[in-house]
Amino acid sequence: MNNRLRVLRAERSWSQGDLADRLGVSRQSVNAIETGKYDPSLPLAFRIAELFGLAIEEVFSSPTQHQSKAI
Amino acid sequence: MLRTPAWKRYNWRVVWLSLAYVAFLLPAVYGFKHRLVSDALAYAVAILPALPIIGIFAAIGRYLVEEEDEYVRMLMVRQTLWASGFALSMATIWGFLENFDLVGHVDGYYIVIAWFFGLGLGGIVNKLTIGDGGC
Image (cartoon, rainbow over all chains, first blue to last red; front, side, top):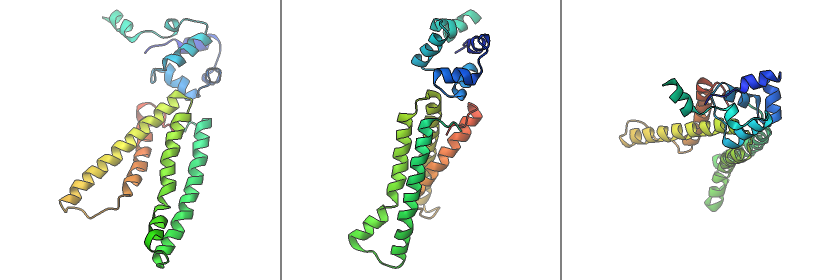
């Protein structure tokens, strides 16, 4: 699942550690989500979106939508 | 290694359980070697060292319940799945080899050793596939 986490974080000049502290997760979790190695649960995805003051679909893009665009 | 609060609590539990294991095992070995135990007491003394090991399994289960970082928890779940798969596969293979008299008998608790080896193997697989070794 693609996401805009790195861009949103960079806009606020937050390090991965800063974001991790704000979310109450490990820095490794933020890194894994950012790099697409791990898809967060719905509650964590909502927490991330709420932290940036955005809707969840503004942070995460649907993999099926992404696929259909590619086709 | 990701040191979350739940992981630190798990580590302490494992340290205490490991100390209990040594505290139970050494007297048990001494007692059996010098024929100091028999009958029902022999069963009790023989089982005592197993209890802290069972405690470690319980500690892993408790850790998975207490771990609030879902990514770190997922890494540990993957590790335990690798551990279980590895240990059960080894036990199955050895069981057939032993059944056809191709290898000698191995004590049952070696499955536990294989399980902990598998836990380490799971950590390596996590590192290779996701990039984090986990716990």
